[in-house]
Image (cartoon, rainbow, N blue to C red; front, side, top):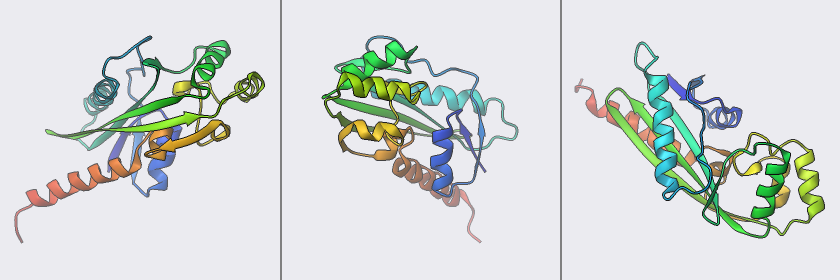
Length: 196
């Protein structure tokens, strides 16, 4: 049985869609994206995912494989976390409008002493948005609680001009990378078994 260290309904839905059997346990630590700039967003996302795994794994008896992810949105070297309020969401969407940005998701998978880490980067380009479009989108309520103030799988799809890379990464969990990591972990387990 896999344990997903996450509060995110989106990550849970993606794992379910992939047919992965799991139970979710919320980490006690919060998603804390530092304000301003992060010099190495990929490293930051990996460290944050690993911190979630360690938090949940430390509370499990017996030890089970634990998966966690952390997503960071970066535009013009500014890290965009979850908007504090509607005004902050409008500011973020204005920054993203007509520009390219990058979504980094760090993934950590730990079982006992075995640890697999990965990071996925996706390039997303927004259309040029009018003030009215930004007002409409914020009024839907969807930007709240989302890194970068948008959800590509919802109304936010209308804001996107182009995407290069993994779509599910932008939702918050790069499924191809996760499935490869799970297969690698299972392969290690089978290699550790004595011959019959």
